Image (cartoon, rainbow, N blue to C red):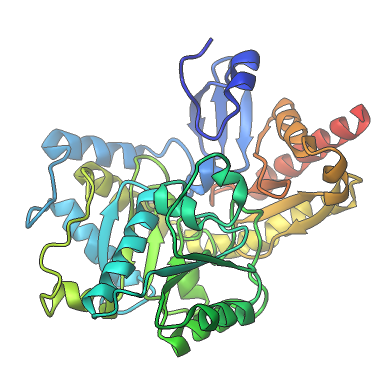
Amino acid sequence: MTRFWHPVADMQAVSRSGELVIDRGEGCHLWDERGRRYLDATAGLWYANVGYGREEIVAAAAAQMRRLHAYSHYGDVSSRPTTDLAERISAFAPMEDAAVFFTSGGGESVETAVKLVRRYWSLLDQPQRTVIISRERAYHGLAGYGTSIVGSDVFKVGVGPLAGDTVRVPWDSAEALAEAIDHAGPHRVAAFFCEPIVGAGGVLLPPDGYLAAAREACRERGVLFVADEVICGYCRVGDWFASSRFGLDPDLVTFAKGITSGYVPLGGVIVGTAVQEPFWQSGAAGVWRHGYTYSGHATAAAAAHANLDIMEREGLAARARELEHEITEALAPLVEHELVSELRSGLGAVAGVQIDPALLADDPDLTDRVTLTAREHGILTRTLVGGGLQVSPPLVITRAELGELASGLRGALDDVAAAG
């Protein structure tokens, strides 16, 4: 019996059935301790963008550890890989002259962004601007503020009171966003948090024109626009950021996952010049008493540099644009299956295979059974909110491996359907 309390898990079920212990990885494949091979359909949790077994990243991290594995970056202290990484990210950020605040992951990045936008408005003598608007089905991590603004109530069950002054709007309506800001009062709204693609909430692609319209609704009302690119950032949707691809010019961007392809934990917030001003220029803020032990961790920064080198050298942003067509082509036949109602794809290397909601209404565990059965066919995927199957493979996946993925999912669907 394991003593490891797994995240987002039914521990009674884990204790009963046992763990799947992953032993090693190479490219787009993983092997468990029994030696069984799996194609990773999810890139871990959307993060293994350059794939597994990249010795270049390992070597960079090891070299930095031998020199200086880490040191506190509070106050005026830094390390060379950290300072250089901030400059590098700023150079391809989706806004001009951006500053970068580092965290250890996506949850901390969202936590930082919420505190930052509220502090920003207080420094502009508008402390009443505390309302945070987010979208239904959206996912913003499970830290305190992230859980408060998450778009699915399943993540809030039994938690009790969370942060107040939060509003949710339909995920696909910029008009509803504008109405919500007007109803709350623009003078009270601090920011709108927007995943360009709603990821864990079901892989919901933005309707045509939605992102630009949502951005404009915020701009017209003086509300900060925060692009949560923890999933979309670092080439997954065919550009360094989805905000770049859609020309959003956000005020802030949260990131994590793809910045290191998961080799070590790292995240951050990219901050535009307007929000920087009272902290960096006027001096109104003084010491902003926020940060983390590992903010700007030197080894994580060194790993990120090596990861970004690979992305640039191998043209993975362009590869993601190719994959949006190749993934659709490979998975489209699954829509004909009796258990499947929809394929959501066509924007970078992100897709969702939706199990029929009518079937899920009668059998809520149906998608979970498909996910577990897929392992028997050599595929690792997972169940999304709403009953879809996640498809977000490493950006180095080949056409042949996409065929392997489609075949494995087809086999799992067939087996579950046959079992009734």
